[in-house]
Length: 225
Image 1 (cartoon, helix red, strand yellow):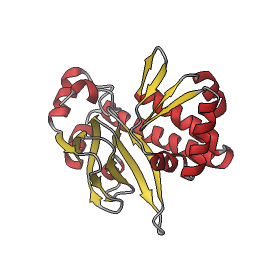
Image 2 (cartoon, rainbow, N blue to C red):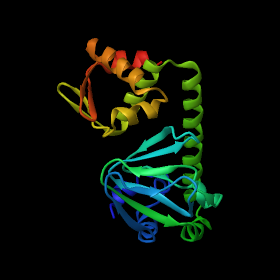
Image 3 (tube, rainbow, N blue to C red):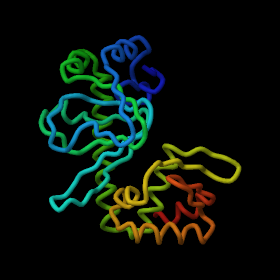
């Protein structure tokens, strides 16, 4: 298990090396192939997961079958923590976007670590606060921002987490289909494609299969505001 990646997760970030290694040894490893589902919305579960390699998408479905992506997560990011404090049905479906590896921790094992370890509890509270702040931002964007603005903001977020800087720009291998990118910003695929084509025609980015090269971060950032 990659301790360097685990240390990126809020659960581990404030622990010393010995404590982090000990907690990591209590975790089990799970591997999925691209397209596999880790769990479905409504499933029971009591484990917290940390992505150690690859990417996953977290989404929900409406009663008429429409899908909405809540988040794309990569190495060092964790999910499933709600079930540790409020055991019950899973609130979303988690699907592997690439081949992916997780480290997971059970409810009982985490409770043992929370007793007498305020830094672990603080890390979880930080994660929950960040998740709530992100949810508030998503709601505000849906109300106040147009689709091109939401697309620009989503690309910048993906670039911040998965981007690699090169001479010709920031290469962002998001591994999402056009439909998944549309679900992430809460718009139709046609509207999102039109926004991407407009950005490309302005020279702000270059489109590639399941990836994008951002060539003008500054202008894309202004469009995201």
